[in-house]
Length: 308
Ligand SMILES: Cc1cc2nc3c(=O)[nH]c(=O)nc-3n(C[C@H](O)[C@H](O)[C@H](O)COP(=O)(O)OP(=O)(O)OC[C@H]3O[C@@H](n4cnc5c(N)ncnc54)[C@H](O)[C@@H]3O)c2cc1C
Image: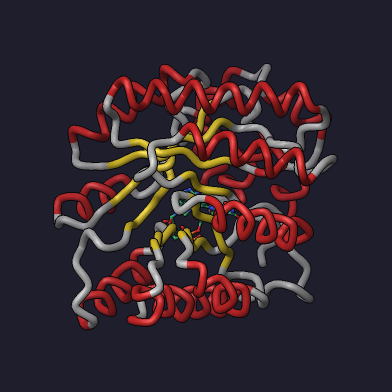
């Protein structure tokens, strides 16, 4: 993988940079491309606009690796409030949470209970999505997911196609009738655990997506989400779905706010169920660095904002 990607992903973990980045106006201006704003109200406004275009939305408040219980409690309260507001506003919106926002780093049981509180506050037909973070968190995340899924039907988890282990993880989750959002993976991972070559990640993505759309997975109650902006993969996966007679509403495409907007609109206009993940919140730095790392050409955009 590219040197620039490595530098940006290292930078994502740098506290010194994190503390300074938000003070620069050009960084904040460039950020607007991926985030409608830091406030929940900004996300709600964006969701209203997207709804007019036939697009569903997923909200996530940025922030990760929280270190104390009161911070994690505040996140739970926040999401419970968000769920009430979404219902009151009748928005086609669900939420996605990171387990390290709910206490995964210091108390797994507490984290599990926090996740369950959020799921219980969500309408039964709306899935609460669990993000997946770097590879050391995968076992704990899937363990908590399995326990939550045993209690609640409306919970889904993200899986990363760049990890060697994911095919086995997917196979072991199938009997649960899981919700799975498949993505390529956004963290810096060593070659012992993840495919170093992008073409291998892409091919693994296609194989995993095909499994998620198989008769067997569908019979078991799989809720499949294809989380990618990769147009080539999207077309290949659409072809598989059509060949297997799946309806355009029986699974979903998810993309990130601000990325491949034309493709987002095209999917919705063609009748494919499509959701846009909108991030908000003050703790955007590591997340933003991961977005830059996905496409280092985005740095040019940041530089252009220095000039204004
Ligand atoms: C809904 C959703 C949820 C996600 N949740 C997680 C998660 O929980 N854990 C996790 O590790 N990762 C998550 N990701 C990120 C994911 O792992 C990838 O890093 C990201 O989606 C880029 O990969 P891609 O599939 O779009 O393919 P790529 O091959 O990287 O990109 C395909 C094309 O999309 C465009 N593109 C992609 N990224 C950008 C960008 N940042 N800026 C501009 N253009 C871009 C480019 O045109 C590129 O050629 C999520 C992604 C989505 C869409």
